[in-house]
Length: 119
Image 1 (spheres, rainbow, N blue to C red):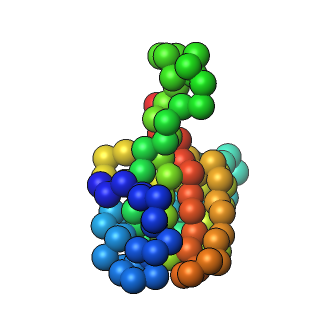
Image 2: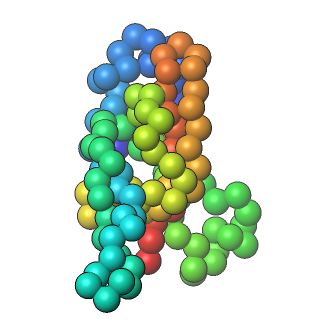
């Protein structure tokens, strides 16, 4: 897992594809119904992407020391408008919920995701 460096924009312009080393899958809960009309908990795959991953530090000491605080991550990937907050992110054996999606258009168009691990 490669950390996002402060000069990531310069790196992005030179060798963006080599920087994206982690494979992630994005899924969205479907509106499927069973035979009785009840909602089923099913997910459909939106896409698989190459991404750079970085662990986020907790913003406050009390949050960092909390036993209930789940690890949060930031993912950097090629620009896509298919991902929305609330989507499920799968990374190896980790399951996360996407909390924010930011499109950035500086040197190279890219999407920045923030996600929190599920229990």
